[in-house]
Image 1 (cartoon, rainbow, N blue to C red):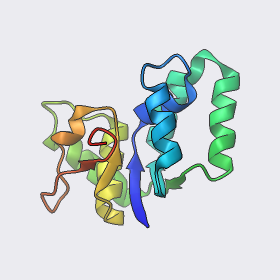
Image 2: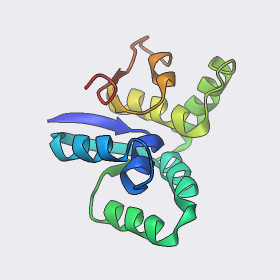
Image 3: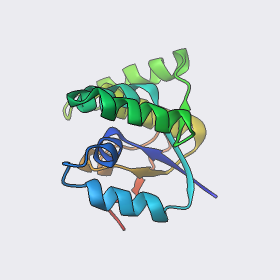
Length: 138
């Protein structure tokens, strides 16, 4: 089964019924067959945007608790790589959540991502591999 990273945008869209991508992400998530992963910085970003409603935030957290996706641990090696990526992509600039996903992708050898951002068309892993955004290509 395929391993795929998830950025904050799709998570926000999944839980915010007013988001323009809500229906697309909902349909995509129902048909997706694989394991979904993210990082704690992505969870934090999503919760911040969902702060318009404590109930929506709680729905999101309960979904995580039920195993909606696996949250990868963030350790010192990831932090060092985030620092390196922030320097490398300082002209974009890369945000903390995106850099954590790139670092996690490298550590876990994950090439696929679900994102609403075109930034992942620019970011490369240490092995100079581009990400395959399976949401935008679907």
